[in-house]
Length: 559
Image (cartoon, rainbow, N blue to C red; front, side, top):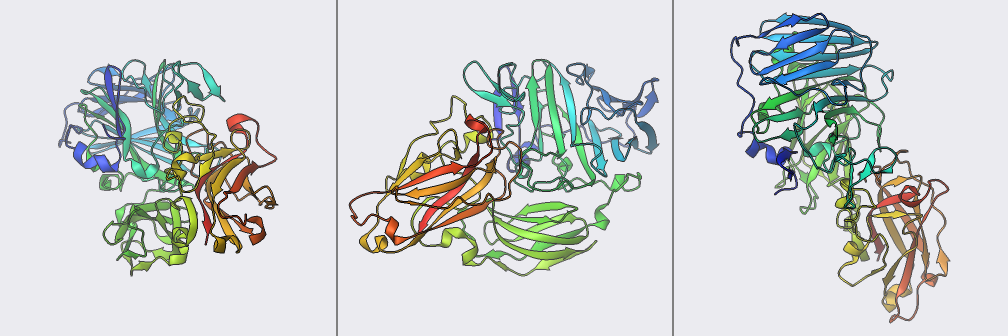
C-alpha cells in the first residue's frame, strides 16, 4: 500500500496526490454530463434554494447565510455533523443570497460584507463547484469545510481526531489509548502533493478537488488542514488561507473553482483537477474577480542545468497577488507553468524544498514567456561545498534525520517516535539517522557530535554550518567545541510565530547559521574525538515540546 493510500477499519479511505491520479481516475468518476438531464433545476423551499443536478445529487443552500444545509447523493444525506452546516469558515452570518440559471448551469451567489462566495451546478453532474473571493481581513482566515454525518466514512488517518477525547496539546492534538497521536493538523501532504482529498466506502466516494491555490499563501510545500474525523462526523477542507506556520502574507482575491465531487467509489475525474479544469462555461456567469483562460499566460523554461539529479526540482512563481508552481522534468529540467495571471513574478528554483536560484519574469495574458536554460551556480547549492563531514544533505527539509518522516503526521510525544536524545559519532555510518530532526531547549538541547580531525585539519580554522527549516519561539543553535570555545548567541532569523514542530510542519524559512571556529579550539591529539555541543537558546517558549526549538536541514564542517 502506497504512502498516499491507506485503509481504515471496515471501510476504505484515500488521499491521492498527483502521482497516483492518472491511474486512479479511470476507476469510477462522476456521471458524464448530459445535454438536458431529467430533473435538472432549482426550487425555493422557503428557507433554502434547492438544486437538483439531474444526476444523483440534490443540495440545498440557505437563503439566510449561504450555508450548505443539505447534500443528498443517491437518496442519502451526507451533510451535517454536530448540528453544523457546511460553509465558509464557521459560517458567515446573515448574507445576501441569490440564484440564477443560465442554460445548463445554476449559480448561487453569497455576499457577506466584502466577501463573495459562489456555488455552481452543471446539468447531469454529481459535482458542486465553489469559488470564494476574499477582499480583506474582515474574515479572519479562509476555508470551506464540508461537514459529513457520523458513520458514513470511518477514518483513522493521521489528520483525524479518531474518536478520542484525550487532549495532549491545546484543544486540537489528541492521544489514542495505544499512545499514537492524531490531529486535524497532521496532513502528511504538502499542497503540491495532491489534487484532491476525501473518503470512499468502495461504492461511494466523497471528495474535495482543490483549487490551484493561486490566492493562497505558503507556496508549493505548505501543509494545511485537509480533513478530520471525530465521534460526531467528519470534515473535508479546502484551505484558502491558513495562518499556522505561515511564511507569507495573506493574498486576497477570487479562489476557485474547487469542487465537492461524488463518485461511485473511485477517484474524481481527472478533468476536475486544478491543472486541467476547463471552466469556459463559467466565463459569462459574472463571478467577481473571475479571469478566464484567455486572460492568463504561461512561463516555460528550456531546462535547468547545475541540478543534483538525486532530487526533484520545482519551479515556483510568486508575487504579492498570486502564486503558482510546476515540476521540472527530471531528464533536463524543462518546466511549464500555465494559468498564470498577468504580472511580474519572482521565479524560484527549488532543489527539493531548498531555494537555489531566483530571477524575475513578466507574464502577459494570452502568451508564453519562454526562458533559456537556467544555470544554477555551483555556489548556490550548499551541498557542493567541500566538507570534512556532513550530517544530512542540503535539501530544505529534515529528511533522513531521526523521526523526520513521522513528524508530518504525529506529535513528537507519539509512542512511535524514537528517543529524541542521543549523541552522534561521525564515521559511524548512521550519523544522519541518529541525529534528531528537531532540537528543543527543554527536550534535547546539548546534543553532542564526536569527530576526529587529521593533523592538518586541526591546525586550521574551519566554518561550521547548521541549516534550519523553521523555528518555534526563536529557538536557534549556539555551539561549544571541546568545552573550551563557545560561539556567540546568533540572532534569530525571521520565522512564523505560531506552532510548527508539534503540528506537523517543518516548513518555515530556510536559514543557515555559520560559525567561524578558530584552530585553537581543536584537539591536537588526532586520536581523540573533538566534541561539538549544540544547544538551543531562546528567551521564549514554555516547556517540553512547546519550548523553543528548531528543525534541522543539514550540519557540516567545511574543509
